[in-house]
Image (tube, rainbow, N blue to C red; front, side):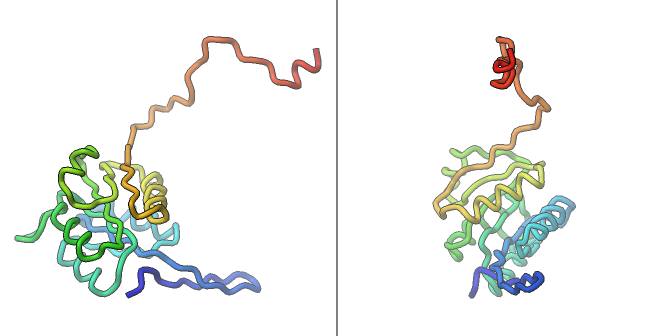
Amino acid sequence: MCRYLLRLIVAPGLLRAVAVQTILLVDAPDGDASLLASALRVEGFHVVLASSAADARAALATSSAALVLVDLMLRTDGGPNGLELAREIKIGHPAARVLLTSAYYLSERQLERADCGVSGFIPKPYDVGEVVNFIRAKVSGPPSSRRLWHAEATSGVVGLPSESPPRPAAGDRARR
């Protein structure tokens, strides 16, 4: 099975095929997952939404994914939770990068103890643009990349005021 789909890009006088990477989002069918899926599609990814472990398995049985984002708190009727599903995906599809997401924060040490082979964690709520950039970096980065997401609330502070007065620009000194 191919990890990539091909998308034809047609520009005046130019026809080329571009590899499109598949992202599988395994999350409750709510606004967050749909919004993230839309943003990833705009960025050129092929996105598959799955609302249960069974849906995720079915999606992975028909095609592979470059990256799978699993909600840690995924609950299904008698099925695995998000952590168990992440382990299962990592064993069955070792080439896929697996990320966890949840409103509950997990530290890097907790993820290592869970021994589920995930490549990172994205806490909810999240900024969709930042998550898209993080996913793009994970998909294009080395497979062993275990850099975690560190979402910090935006403070609105652009920079700290300096203690010394600003130095004049080089052109200002020349005119004196």
